[in-house]
Length: 114
Length: 111
Image 1: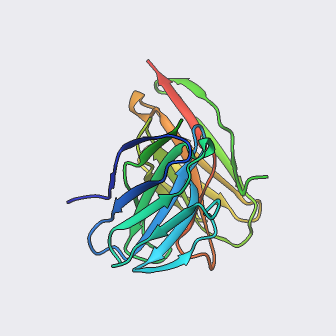
Image 2 (image 1 turned 90 degrees about the horizontal axis):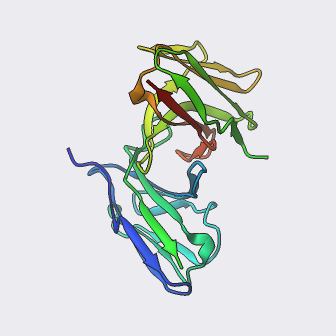
């Protein structure tokens, strides 16, 4: 079956530009997570949705980062006024719900800010 | 200090070797424990969950010591295809499904 998909797979942005990253979770998965992975590091949690409700956004590094999941399915992570330190791979994961269920990761969007 | 700490490696081993990875976590409220595998430029994938009683899946054995807040992964008879980064992951009580990853340990198995 279809896994988690993300688009675009690669994005180059000039410093100061806004970007929008899309995640299509596995159909029926209630929980959706965004992680940021810098080169040579493990993924770091950004934010978490249960259906359309954003239950935890404690990992968002600044108010330039904003995520939404308005209909409880597709999610968008938006970064305003990108900075070089935003360069990373942004991973989306979905699960059936709760901490007992395996999270399935998408292939990620590699963002490079020049 | 990071909440989950791993030796970043790289570990370079010959085929057939046994290799062990260690991980420590600092939050005593950690509830669930996992090893994920991540191939170069790919997404992380669950390798195995880790239980207090220890668990084995073929050539892979995972152990958890809650008292020492220590997790291990043992790979026996390593294969070329085991080359990847191994991520130690925890989930904390009352934090929903949020996963906390270690830095990852890189393994390279050579012929």
